[in-house]
Every structure is written in structure tokens, then in C-alpha cells.
Image 1: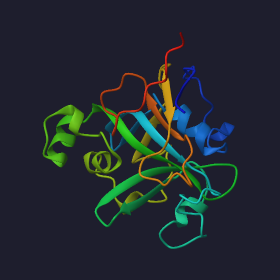
Image 2: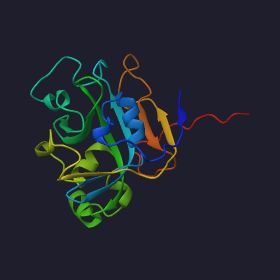
Image 3: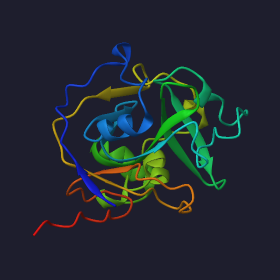
Length: 202
């Protein structure tokens, strides 16, 4: 079941006011329309997925390891892991208990385009950040960023203007563990995969 989430005001609380210490699905939804930069390269967040510490699909579900240690640290930090030994993936640690995070799945690239194009070997803007591995390559995110705080260099976060948000199932998970914790900006051309549109009422 896909639903449209009401556009948020863009006036969200800061890290000190508890923005990160909420359920990861709330954080994932509210991050749509924000911008993230790494060394001044980045863009608007247009797609996210939430992972709760009690979620079998979460890396933290079976406890702390060297790989997922950042998920058990303070909220408002980065958790970076390598997917299938190939692509880096950027997550924002959050939640009211250790072990939850939001995967940043796609960006609308807005700043440092030449650097992103060079890193990706692509000129098409839609090919730069339309997936978690792509955006990490474009922003040069690696394991070196794991555990770093999100409101200080090399990271920078900026609240965004109001946007419409679609909500639907996460990608690549079994039905047994899936929930509608994937969020995407309405009308974005940079989603990693198209989101089902909600049915129109008669």
C-alpha cells in the first residue's frame, strides 16, 4: 500500500532538539527535501529507507559488530558500509534506541557537479546520484566517513523547502520483513527506482 505523506514545513528541529532521536521512519520521511553535502559536494535528498533496531532487515538486528558499530553510537552520525563488497552506502544513525538508521538512497545533485561527473565518469545528471552506491561514489563517501558527525565537516546538512512525499515498500527485501519504510519525493527524476503511485479516488 503506497500513500502520500503530507508535505513537511522544512522547519524541522535540529540535532540538539531531538530530530534524530525519533523512529527511523519518521526521520526518513522528514529528510526528503533536505540537502546533504560532503566537502561541499552533494544535493537534495529525494529517496530514503528506514531501518529499525528491531527490524530483521537491519544490520543491527543480530547485535553489534565491527562493521555496524556506528549504528550503536550517538544519533546524528554517519554509518557507512560496503554493499556486496562493491558499493559504499551512506546511512544516518537515528532512533530512540541504539541500532537504527536511515539509508540515503538518492539525491538530486545540486553542488559540485563537475566533481561528481568526474568521479562517476558520467555527464548525465540523472546518472550521478540515483542510487545509494552511485551517490557515495559521486560524493566520494567511503569507510573513512563511518562514525563521523553529520553537522560538522566534512558533512553539512541543510533543511529543505516543503515537498510532497511518496511512501512505499523498501527495495530488495522479502515480504516477511518488508514494511512501507521507503520514501521518495513526488515527481523526482532521480529516484533509484520508480515508486508506485497511489490510486486516485473516484
